[in-house]
Image (cartoon, rainbow, N blue to C red):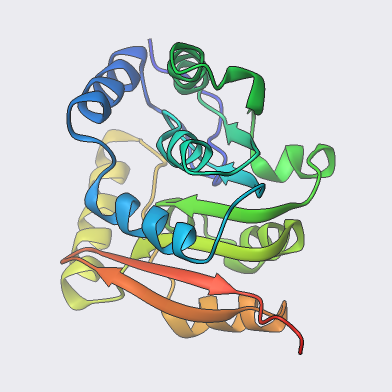
Amino acid sequence: MPNETPCGCGCPNTFSSKEADGDLERYRKKGPDGTTRALIDAIVAEGIDGATLIDIGGGIGAIQLELLGRGAASATAVDATEDYIRVARGEAARRGLDDRIRPLVGTFEALASEIEPADIVTLDRVVCCDPDLPGLLGRAAGKASRMVGLVFPRDTWWNRVASRLLALWGWVTRDSTRWYLHGTPAIDRVLGDAGFRRRDVDRSLVWQVALYVRPTEA
């Protein structure tokens, strides 16, 4: 049965155990998705030895596992889907990394006060689930000392059409899940006000990858 707890990004969660297991199987066979891999590589290029991570909406834990395997010290994984946390914990244990990951079930909004700041905060395909962009990114930026990594939809005409069609389908099926397109200028504004500057990493037909880095003081 699907979990009905709201997801960490603010949308109703309808992911099932079968979907979580399937995502893990694909990850084991092929590694991270292309955009996720691009974000991971960009973060690693900045230097992550001994770094700490908060992975919001972390799913099966691909970002956590990859960064811990490349030199990061520890990670906090936030996801409202218990099945994804279960799968992520199992994979971390299989790799001998479970003692370096703190898994938290619930929304980032609800759990933020319990989470210590970290060097890096990641939100892979999370921004598009939350209508409150300033609230979500403001809380995320407040926890990051060095970097905020994002994968989010490009604000294109075809994505806008897809968003409207998904909203129509949700109305027909009474599914409250929505896909929100937040423009890059709006994202830049929130993270820029928090002291971060964007570095474009990659883009696909649908997704954009960006790493927001806090400039080091001379």
